[in-house]
Structures are given as structure tokens and as C-alpha cells.
Image (cartoon, rainbow, N blue to C red; front, side, top):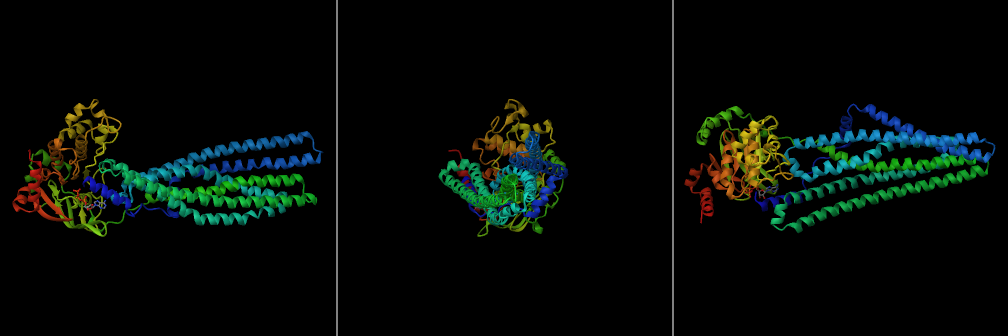
Length: 623
Ligand SMILES: Nc1ncnc2c1ncn2[C@@H]1O[C@H](COP(=O)(O)OP(=O)(O)OP(=O)(O)O)[C@@H](O)[C@H]1O
């Protein structure tokens, strides 16, 4: 794909409605949380017990205050009783504070562990999902779930658990306490119940959609940011900064808009709660006044009832506030569990894999025996192909078919080149062969699973990533059990032993962004050496050595030939001398294979390939 195409594709990806990764339903969320809690039910019960005891201790102070008022008013109580009541108030407050603190810390530890487990499971699952599914959703969607959504839950969980446990208990005990002082106080307070019920129902009707839309807007913003950063060179090269800035700004304003809507919903909710508090307190004061002036109750009783009611504000509010947190956290949790439970769309029957004939040792033997390419190709004759596409059709956009009726077969030691004009569909064929996408019609047969990979196949594209790690780690990530000798041998195979000698600490040199930076050609040699270590049955190179510059073309071509030796190779050739080196060449135009044969045959044919070759030879001839 050219730089412009990659930008166009990025734009298409950014603008299309794109199927996002799934969002779990309530049952899936409950199941995932139960699984993440594992055997920690006892810890959870301990947290609830500690917080409940803390809430009970907190009720001592207001009850003692009422007693104090009555004692002072009667004027007959000794100072010893007053001291006892004072000590009870202080003791109750201290015990309540300590128990609540212990409960909150224990709860936080428990919930952080559960959240960490969910995040780990989500990331692990994301690596297993088909690349095409993640690409279609946009990597921003996944990143936003692993960051924004996890942060949302982490922030909400420590508030939700104490509120749900201690607040519920405090509310229940306090209401009983008010009724014990005088049932008429309880009746006055009961006025708040319908208002709260109405407020919560209104909130639950309005808040979830706003939070879900807010999270989706955040994911869209992350997607645009990542797309622009990922293609920053292209953005600069084509002066697309303004367009990308505008797109990011639009996505950011969407987030701002949804944030504001969320705040409006919250404020209206809390406004309703304040009305309930106002009406409850007014009722209590009126009832208290009537009871005390008519000698039906004491001033201390009224004080206790009012203190109890004031004490209800916090637990009621924290319970209702956590409904807000819970809505928000549940929206995030549903997005995380959505990835954990995500299943790729079922493959059509034709997409099954077939066993690759021969194993890695056979391939090594073939290479060691020095069989030249032509002989290898002949040896493949009659053997089943290791990679086969039959009548494959594919589209990114249903209105624009990209491939139609593409069939190709590759023998186990054969290299096949794909050539054709820009936009013909070469990279798409490579992506289908590698399993990045599945065809919309036809079938693809790939080699079956190999150690550490779900298919015995490796795809290398232009975008070679050098991880910020040692050279050894960069290579052994493809073959974790490889020792230093094998790593050095792989580097030597692709002619990168010179690179190794130049690095100050050899295999221990840190390369990538935080260490010794590699040139594009060196990065591509690294990718080829990594593939040699992985030793797949099929190697697919999508213009893997196209961008390293013509000065390195010869080195990279020899490295490619060595890396492909003894295995099946599908090479999307940017330079036609890469195609010439392959056993067979397929010419693709407008999504169809129009010519097929060796370099010599196709030149003799005098068709499209011959014309491409003439044009390319003229262009590259020394002047
Ligand atoms: N992710 C995508 N979304 C939408 N359209 C795409 C996407 N990738 C490629 N296309 C379109 O599909 C068609 C074939 O693209 P493809 O990259 O396979 O061609 P190519 O032959 O490899 O081109 P090039 O040599 O320029 O890389 C082009 O029209 C391209 O714009």
C-alpha cells in the first residue's frame, strides 16, 4: 500500500461507522465479576462485616447527644452520667472511624485485584481476537477500554463498596432509631421516600444512555488520536495536519458535549435529592415543635430524631451518588467484559486450515541440501499446496468490491510474487492469506497451528516494529526457547551479523526508541531474522523491504531470499527484481489475477507484466 493509500485507508477506517467491539449484557458482566472474584467470597464477607460494625458504632454519638440534652434539661443528672455520655460519643466516633478506614482499605485491595484480573483477561483476549476484528473496530476502541474504562472502575469501586454496605445498614438502623424515639418522627421522614424513588427512577431512565454515549465518544477520540499519531509521517508528508487536527477536535467536542450532558443529568438528580432533604427536615421540625409544645415528647427526643435525620443525609446521598458511579462503572465494565467474551464471527466451512505437508526439519533439510528454487518448485509438483485461496472475493465497503474470483496455490518450498498497479488488491490478498481478514466469498486454506502461533505462518509488512528492548528480546519474541547460538545463526542467515558486531553490547544492546536506534533497513533485517527463528511453514512479505531505500535493496533481497529458503513464500513485490527472483509471478489488476508464470514466461507473453518490466527497467536503468 502506498503512503497515500494508507492515509486514505486510515481516513476510511476513521470515518466509517465501523463495527465496534461488543459490549456485554448484565448477565455476562455478573458472570465475569463472579469469575474474577474467584475464591475471595470470604474476604468480601469480611469487608461487609467490618463496614457494618463501623456504621453501627457511628450511631452511638447522636443517641448520646439526645441523652445529653435531656440530662441537661432535667437538671437532676449527676456529672458522672454526663461524662459517661460524652465518653460514649467520643468512643463511638473513634471506633466507627477506625472500622470504616480498615473496611475501605480492605475493600480497595479486594476490588483492585478483581479489576486487575479483568484487565489482564481483556488484554489477553484482545491478542487472541482476529486482527481484522480489532482493526475494524479501531485500535482506539480497545485502548480506551484498557485505559479510560479501567480507570473509571478503579475510581468508582472504592466509593461503591463502602456506600453499598455501610450506607444501607446505617439507613436501616437510623430509620428504626427515629421510629423508636417517636413513630410520628418516622412518619414525617417518610415523605422523602417517594421523592427518592421518583428521583432514582428518573435517573436510571436517563443516565445509562448518556454514560454509554460518553464512553463511545471517548473511544472515538482515542481512535482518531491513535490513527493520526500512527501515520504521523504521512500526515506531515502530505500536510494533512489541519485535517487531522480538525478531526481530533470534532471528536474531542463530542466528548465535551457528552460530559456536559452527563453533568446536567447529575445536577438535576442531586437537585431532586436536595428537595427531599428540605421537605424531610421541615416535616421533622414541625412534628418536633408540636410534640414538645404539647408535652408529647422531650427536647432530647427531638434532638436525637433531628441528629439521626441529619446523619441520614450522608448515607442516603452516598448510596444515591454511587448509583451514579455504578451506572458509569457498569457501562465501563460492560465494555471490558464485552472484549473478554468477544467471539469472532464464525468462519465459513471453506476457511479451515490444512496440515502443511512436511515439518520444519524437512524444510531445513531441503535448504541444507542446497536445492535451488527451480528444483524446490518441481519437488512441490503433485504435493498438496501449503497455502491455497480458492475463488476468493473481498470488500472493505460493500459497494466497492476489492477482490473477485482470486485463486492461488503455493507449494511448500515455492515462492510466489504478487505484482500489479497500486490499489490492485495485492496487500488485500496478503492480508487474506495471513488471516488478518476473512474472505466475503470463497475459501482460504492456511497451514495449521504451530508452537506459539495459531497458524504456522508469519506476515511481515512495511511497518516493522522494533520493541524498546534488547536485540535478543526483539528476536526471541518469535521463538522464546531460542538460545544465543540460534539467535546469532538467524542473524547470520539474513546477513545481519555485521549489525550485531557494530552494536556496543552485542545481543544485550537495547534497541528501539529508548536505546540504539536502528535504520529502516536494519529494522527489516531484524524482522527477517525474527522470522527465520520462528521458522514458519509460510512467510508472507507485504512489501516488507520496499521502503528501506534503493541503496540497501541488494542486501535486503539477499536477506529475503535466505529467509524464504526452504519454506513457502508469498511476496507482494514493490520492486520488480524482487518478483523476478520468485518461482512464479501472479499479476493482479482490479482485484483479479490476469497473468501467471515465471519471469521469463511472462516477458515472452508480452502482456501487462512485460510492459511493467519494461517501464520499471527504464526507470531504474543507470543514467
Ligand atoms: N482498510 C481499508 N479500508 C477500505 N479500503 C481499503 C482498505 N485497505 C485497502 N483498501 C482499498 O482496497 C483497494 C486495494 O488495496 P490494496 O492495498 O490491497 O492494493 P495494493 O495493490 O496493495 O496497492 P499498493 O500497491 O498501493 O499498496 C484499494 O482501492 C484500497 O484503497
